Picture (spheres, rainbow, N blue to C red):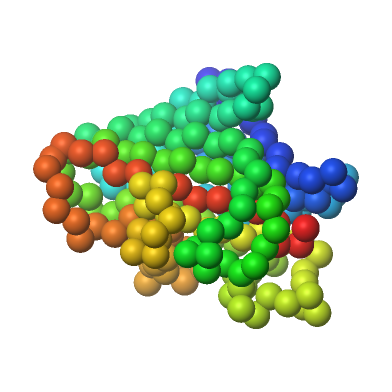
Length: 213
């Protein structure tokens, strides 16, 4: 089987600084990596964590199909779908110009380009786990935004913030979980202590941008 092409999407400013997502086919699904971009240079910062094929509740969305949509008004959009167990997944990735609501508690940042991930899963039973999980690449590491100052900026960096159901209310912020067996992993997840009729659709959004810009 010939591997599908590796689509990319850049969220960069006029100086060429920002972030990039690259999707690659790996076995039976797409995985992706986030790069920091500075002009012609790009460094991998973190990559999605994927589960084995037999997992009904994967640690990250199980995505087997990818479509590229190019709209003159809204720009390039990556749309992915897939299935694991009895659940159906969809993810869209687009470039947005974001202004940050104070409820997200990510500091006083100006409007800038970001990669916007909109994730949904249709479930027939209460999930064991859901979310979008990442691990650092190479020598990259997670940093607390409180410790990220102009005096200690690395050459490349990317940041993540998110919300449940597309809202920005403090109670709707995504949880961040570190799996006990993967200390370098961070899983951005929707809380599972909700009472909903099944089947139902669970949705969350997150944004990735460069705090260096």
